[in-house]
Image 1 (spheres, rainbow, N blue to C red):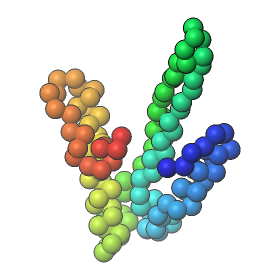
Image 2 (cartoon, one colour; image 1 turned 90 degrees about the horizontal axis):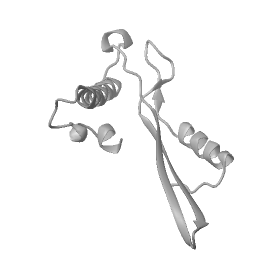
Image 3 (cartoon, helix red, strand yellow; image 1 turned 45 degrees about the vertical axis):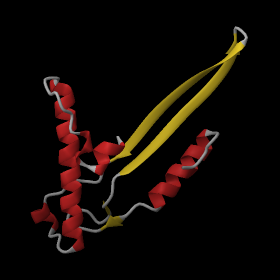
Image 4 (cartoon, rainbow, N blue to C red; image 1 turned 180 degrees about the vertical axis):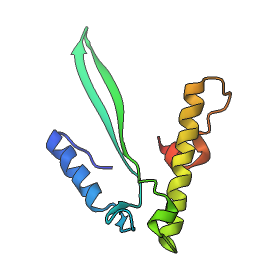
Length: 120
């Protein structure tokens, strides 16, 4: 976790994360993202009034999901194929969570079905 105090600090931290993100070429995309990126901003502010300090806290998740590409079209094999399978599974799990939340009739929301949904 990186502590930041300004918009410029946030931009530098996001650029750092982007530089360290895994990308590999496929037949469909020369720089295909092979990982999801989650950038979480915790916002904290305080204000003194009525003789006490009052705090406000917030959390903002910025998410860039790895692309879901048809495996036949990418001609992926080996490690790249395994990555694609994992990416597609995590995107399916996210879709299941969203569907369960929107539907409203589910007694169970499958948040723990993937690392991605657990983090979000």
